[in-house]
Image 1: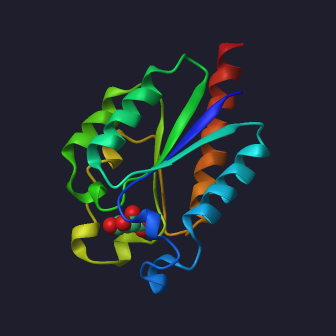
Image 2: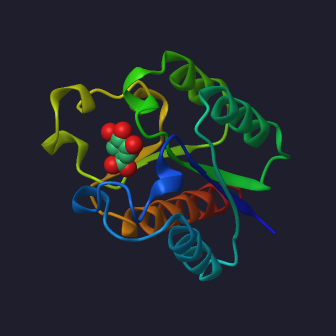
Length: 155
Ligand code: DQA
């Protein structure tokens, strides 16, 4: 089955208890369920992962990039604070051929100035910011539509 990878970066394992006024009370298990529900509507599988380590996120992007054409439709990536610091993650996104959608639960542009810059955005196919958990479903829908447009263009 075609797959979308959902990669979550540092501190997102603490969703539900971490700064609930900003990130809400949804846990990462709830988030995973919401992603699987959004994907089911398109008959797409979800590969859902979380790591607090920058290198693990880079390795996973490379792994997604190596998967056979058509099998991985794209990556939904919430890199947490690495978004604002990691040149290496930005380079990894540019180095792979699968589309990456950058997602943030909070509206980073309404927060501290250091969160306004993203090293990831220039390499991403799209960005979803400030919709909370719903943003992941929007990104999954967007990747499914992009994949359909690509396959229609090949016909
Ligand atoms: C975040 C925003 C980042 O600035 C922050 O460091 C996070 C979460 C979000 O989903 O809103 O860890 O990516």
